[in-house]
Image 1 (tube, rainbow, N blue to C red):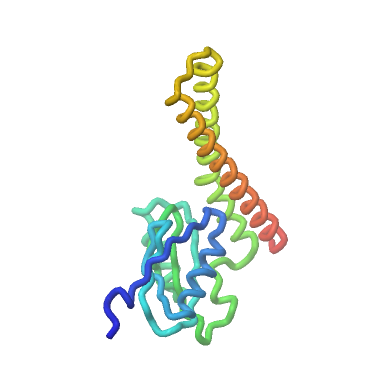
Image 2 (image 1 turned 90 degrees about the vertical axis):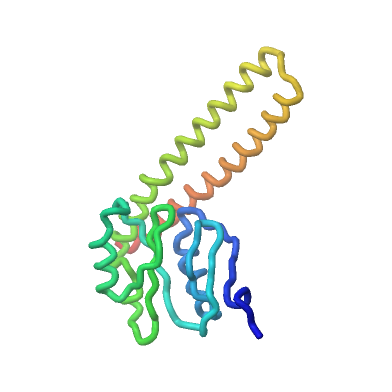
Length: 193
């Protein structure tokens, strides 16, 4: 006999803000395998067991404040999309793919619309990340200058500095990865304008 834990599945998965298409495909593939998306906190995805279904998931970044989205959700509902949740500025939608034309499974009508969304994400999410990254780098430089160049570092200072350098390097890698993904999306959608 299957218990509740057999009917619920939690998966740790990470997608950058520029990997929304990969996230859509992942959720669509899970539904085809019999796991319906329930929700996410951005890092852990919860699925409920279901019959394998042909549905598509789409994410949209509207930029509209949460309290002012009723008309936005109504527009999607009018086109057959089921609203699921909002997380990190993205709205999650689902629609059955059975008997529906491919163009009706898209929330954007053309490359220009996709490009507009990508630009919104870049302005609202990427630019602040770049600012935080450079602020962290300035802090790193200040610590090196005050503690190490003055000749007063102790063991704790060295450990802290090495830890900070590792975190900064990981952030630098993630930042370049996200920027590369955004440039790829911009090029892809610019071709379809």
